[in-house]
Image (tube, rainbow, N blue to C red):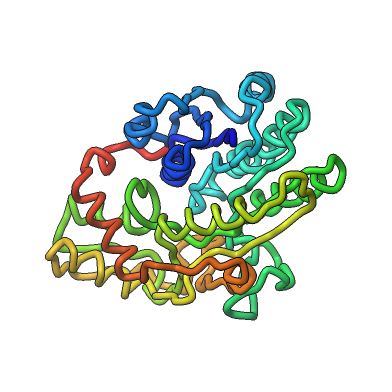
Length: 324
């Protein structure tokens, strides 16, 4: 098959490119390299079935030409603004990348005749639910973050295109993903802090925020489970939660990180139950629907955090990158 991967030079996108190429599929990665890294594609560049197109999903004309040239069987849409914490500082960024950018991807797909789209959404669309683990059918409460709201709007657009134009729209609601090439989030932030000051670690909130995480290997297995189960002429709209059955609080995650670093810093908490506006104090998703297709996790949360820490320790160049 042919795959067109937006955000293909990013943490998750580059892993998808690698797994697709390992199965001898053709892959076009589309990335503006604002947060992605060509270094992540070092192996992909050695494969004749791979091509990187440098472009911005906000540029509909350029994106449409790229999709038309590639003529993919699937568009795998990972490109997004994933900086959840700064949503209130620059709310337009979430709209431009996560909502309008997704509409651009769908329009490019429609005009090119590509009718299968897989979208990386987020467990944050559930806001602060009352049921844990949270199933796909849970009622949506008020949206508490610009990131979650923009991703939910993207989901709605995919649903509309699926019904209006005969698309197969597959939405995955992710927990936070960990593992090699991880380049933003709490593990990154803590290690970067400790690199500068190994004696003190400043922690947003009270450290009791409880989240499920998922190793990148388990994420890839879940995505491919659904892709392979899809029929050639299938259409409609499907939503899958993906995450680990277990969850840990921030303090536990810190213990795993400092254990890998061999440090014993003092912790300074900013206080409150949230790290920032829109930070849900608990995210844990029900993955029964995906498990019914045969998927299951292979990595526990401790190993996921440790693998992430080990990668960052071994790739300090990534810690020096200026996150946008």
